[in-house]
Length: 130
Image 1 (spheres, rainbow, N blue to C red):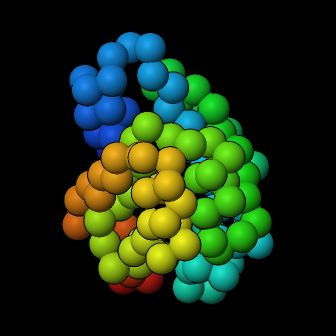
Image 2 (cartoon, rainbow, N blue to C red; image 1 turned 60 degrees about the horizontal axis):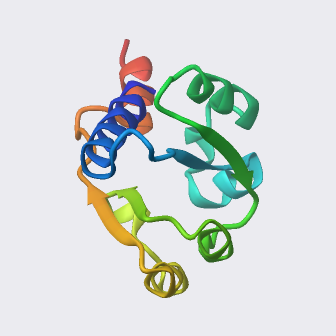
Image 3 (spheres, helix red, strand yellow; image 1 turned 180 degrees about the horizontal axis):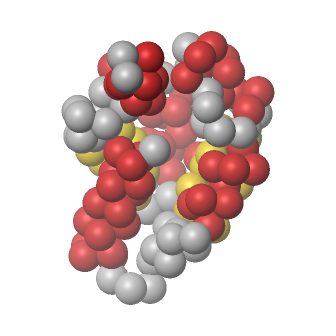
């Protein structure tokens, strides 16, 4: 949804300002399987292919991959990111394994405030009240 896109654009801008144009923006996108484990049952509106396609249209995103797990630490260790950005809200707290993996890689962790006016729950609420 719009809030995710604005968030990703903000992340890309912040990282490119600090790291320069030579950086790569890689998106680890939850597969449908892992998204269903993390989200409320009604909030997964678009499937993985739809979400990945939308993200692929943005020129600031260099690579997208899916993962089936709720724990992202294995992928962190494989990628070894310079920066790791995540929405700073209660639903997206780093678990201890992810934090350790990021520490082991020497990654800079950026928790970025999402726009509070855009969320899947609010979109669904708006539709129901229409």
